[in-house]
Length: 492
Image (tube, rainbow, N blue to C red; front, side, top):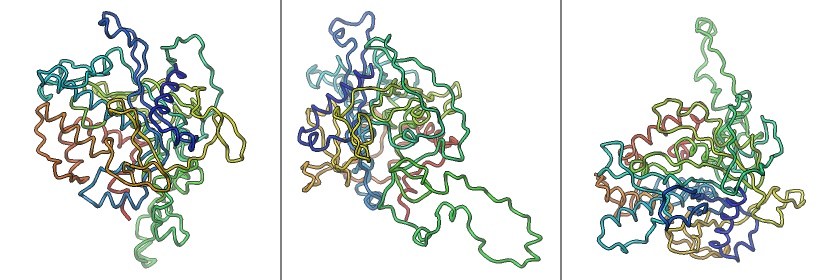
């Protein structure tokens, strides 16, 4: 099954991304979110042809993210917030494309029911992964609610282990993967995730990591050669007291700094710690763990969904280690959603390795030795994204340096055009259209093409209060309470 997931994902990559780019940049990262249609009793004859079928719902290709300076500019410019894609790593692009596709399927269903012309919209019914259900809550807009079809499961593919904790080869015993040959082509392993002992928290076992940004401004302490993590946590007294007075003062217990917060030398390449002023955007491992807590669907679609959408499996190509991946993408969030009343639960996907690699000719290690599944170097600034409802087999090209659509895929002469259909701004627009058709009192207009971060946050809390509350709970978890908020990321 893992090989099937990898094959259909890479076939979509070869179909959507120009051959000229694939030939020039054989080493990149590809991620995809795939729907699996299982056999279901009593289904209509016209839908039986999708039994066991795999369908890519979102494809992402890329390894870049926008720099600190560009991030600051977007944050401070209220006229264009959300139009740049801050993180163009493949996993993030695939999830954004998935959210766009789900929104299009819901929108098509709503328009079909509003139109007397049965051919007014593209018929998504045969392969749509969602269906209407009777709402459990009376406060749902117009009693319109959707859920995943009972015979559909969601599967995540990454051509390489997600950056961050999933590539931290420490604190766990790694074992060679054993493949279960008894599983059929539509079956995946049902291996229970054994809780991980938190024995090395001080050394960074569960630590949050950010993508290292060379353009991030150094603090005055850094420029003077002082460790920023130490200077921030051990500030000198503001004034010098008289010795006699100091004896009368109660002695304060010194706070010992965790070794993992003193420097980032222990981190995987291209990553840093959250308090070291060397990064602004969280690693893909952190983000996937977050999606395994509060779902892949995002905030604005949740009011119309019966339950969060979680991945059933995660398939990885290069650098896969079950124990490390388990720790990175779910098990370090143990304790989240323990209450029986919680709609949001910690999801433990089945973890699988594939021997279907992106570059079958091998990848180059830094030592120059060529091996299948080894280390790779990524040079292209161009990133790609595709989803079925795009209306074209060609992927959109995103300039990873700007987060905007590139109209020319030439590395030497990239012309910046408009914002992408998977940008935060575009996703908000289509979600607003959906909520309007459902009768939601939005009290907001995007016709002036302006959006600020405070406005976006207020809108999310008003329209998707339950999801935002779950996100707050996630950010209070002992592992994730140091998450970098967007407001604090861009402060200089």
